[in-house]
Amino acid sequence: MMAVFEHTVRLAANHYREQVASLAEPMARLELIVTCIVLGQSTLKEGTGSASRRGAAMSREHLRLAQSRPDDLQAALDPLIALIAEQLFHGMKAGSVRECAPQRLAVLVYNLVATTVHTELLAQEATRRDRARRLQLAADLWEFCRRAIAAP
Image 1 (spheres, rainbow, N blue to C red):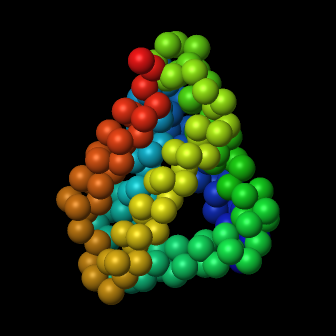
Image 2: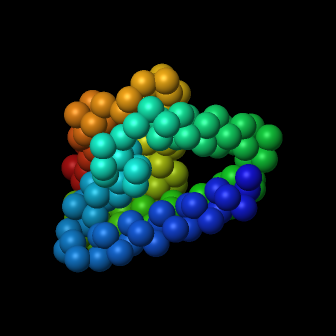
């Protein structure tokens, strides 16, 4: 499972990097990354109950690995956290993100988003994905993160 997580996270980080490349503002790049994590690639189209069950299974495995192999899981997450930290660093340079250790702030942002997504996926496992609900969740999470990282 570690190899699957490493591969999946690496692909996601590369995909998000491509998606944000055309955005000039670091905060816009961060918003897109947070939104993509919440929506997941499969939710860009209408979701199915099957997709919800797969997402919930991956969430359960992610949580299991966090408990049984936290160092390995953290290493697997490094490409995505590094991408978030990079955007935070650029935001600090632009004056839109408060001064802080970018890596530490990236971990906090990622953990908040991932934990919320895990909770949502597990709660909605047996139902059809509600795209409007997921979009609202992405907007609410981004607003929370934006306020937490914004420069004074």
